[in-house]
Length: 286
Image (cartoon, rainbow, N blue to C red; front, side, top):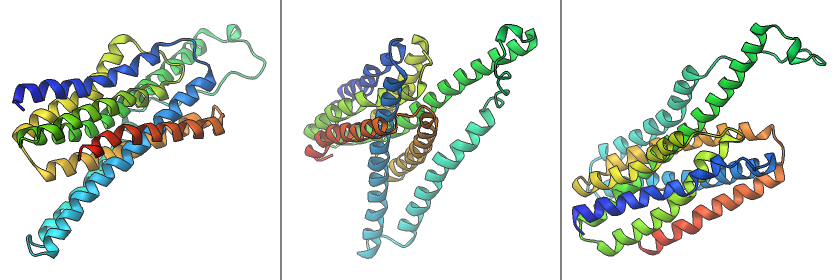
C-alpha cells in the first residue's frame, strides 16, 4: 500500500469520530437520557482502558520473553517497565495536577432558601452568573480532556496502521483501518457524553473531533516511516492513565443526577460496543 493511500485511509479511520459528536447539540435530551449517554461513554472509555493497557503490557511481556531467551539484556525489559510506569503516572496523576491548576474557583454558596434572585444585589447576581459560566467551562474542559486522552490512544492505533502498510501487510492494514474506523465512531459519544446540559458550539465540536481523531491520521504517517515499540508503549501508557483519570471524573460528575441502574446498564452497553468493534481488528490479526 502506498504512502498516500495509507495516509488517506488513516484520515478516514480518524474522521469517523465526528459521527457521535453532533449529539451534543440536541436540546431535547432529558436528564435521564444525558446520564445514559454519559455512562455509555464511560463504558466505551472502560473498554479503551482495558485495550490500551493490554497492548502496553504485551510490549513489556515481549521484552521479558526476549530477555528470558537471551535475545536481549536485562536493561531491555527494565527500561520498558519504567516507560510504562512513568507514562501511566504522567497520564493520570500528571493530568490531574494540570487540571487542578486550570480549575476555576469553587462556586459561591447559593442564595438563602426562600429568597428570590431578583432580591439579590447586582454584584451577587453577577457572581452567580460567573459561577454558571465556570461550570460550563469546566464541563467543556473535561470533555476536551477526554478528547485528548482518546487522541493519545488513536495515535497508537495510527502507528499500527502505518507499520502494517509499510511492511506490505495490505490485508491487515485494510482490516485495521475498517476496524478502527468503526471503533472511533463510538468514541465521539465518549467525548460529548459528560457535557450534560452544556451545548457546545460547532467550532468546539470540530476542534474536539480533530483532537480526538486527528492523531490516527498523524500516527499512520509516523508508523509508515518509523517502527518503534518504545514509542507505541509510551502512547499506550499515557492514554491508559489519561483514560482512567477521565473515567473517574465523569463517574463522579454523573452520580449527583441519580439513575444508577440505568447508568450501569448503559455502561455495560458502551463496553460491549467497544468489544464488538474491536473484534473486526482481532479477526484481521491486529
